[in-house]
Image 1 (cartoon, rainbow, N blue to C red):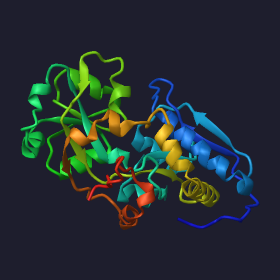
Image 2: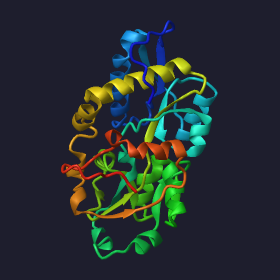
Image 3: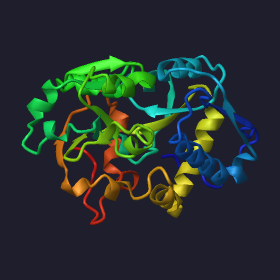
Length: 286
């Protein structure tokens, strides 16, 4: 992280645009918008006022990143990182979900927990078809670890699960309950956890130097003050998530992520940036 405190910039960032789907609204998006607001407020003295502006475009993650690379429509995007993505866009190298995206529990069909007994081996999980999205970094990670991955568009994956196109749908710890709230035939699987290093970053256009400096400064401030940790512990999307997911009782399998850049790997040594259990045992994947 860059130490920028005490510096004032003459060209403040005014409008900061991000994608917000009207057709497929996602309640989890509030976490990222609220965190971005916290960061921008922390850097207001140095960079001035701002306007966070949602833009109503229907785009996949890949199209959104391509738009940001061309400097069209939006100024910021958030998604799981990869070496390829970091080459195309400017990452703000702080995990905005404290590594939560790398801890995967499953959505399954109601009544099929018996297919996921505690005696189920990792090899058996790998043979059973699972669902993931086109162009998702998770898809590449799971395929590189020899899982049987069935791909689909993100908006159809729950329907594909219900239609038995695959048997389970790995999701980050905070995601399943939001996604199946109106799906009475789907439940969260009880026994297993997949984990791999998979930080999620804010991404901006590589030429947007002012916004890069502002985000680094604001993020550094809220980490040092403890505001980031308080935000993570109390936000409705992430509050009490380790308890809710019953981490201590799950059988965990650690996977490799071959898509991490050296710069991202180096972040694992900064313990302030990652989730921990209540007894402070580190949850950072090896």
